[in-house]
Length: 144
Image (cartoon, rainbow, N blue to C red; front, side):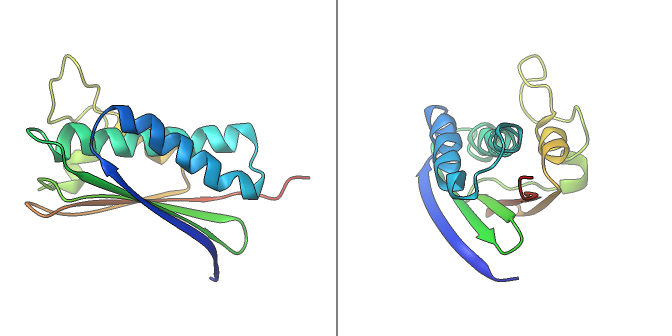
């Protein structure tokens, strides 16, 4: 699969940067002429991944988050969100709907479920104490 274009952005894990990540992704993906629903799906998935980093990866400090977006032949988009935070000790448990390590009254624990519903593939890898990488993949069908 041949990569056609890529962008990599690193920003502070502050809640105001969640909107920046969404906007930066949208600006990069304009070259594919995605439909509004396709763009909304990817922006929502990125929003959830970035929010997870802000809330869970860095519970007591502000740390770096890196977003890489790549476009491949065939309209395939791969977005990777990486942090260097506390990591996830049990990925399978973390991906269960309603599971949260945050305040259950404030958090629904649906981040990974939302990502999976909007993307074709969601892959999570993590090492406790070293960080987490979430890879989101979506194939954009050509417009008719």
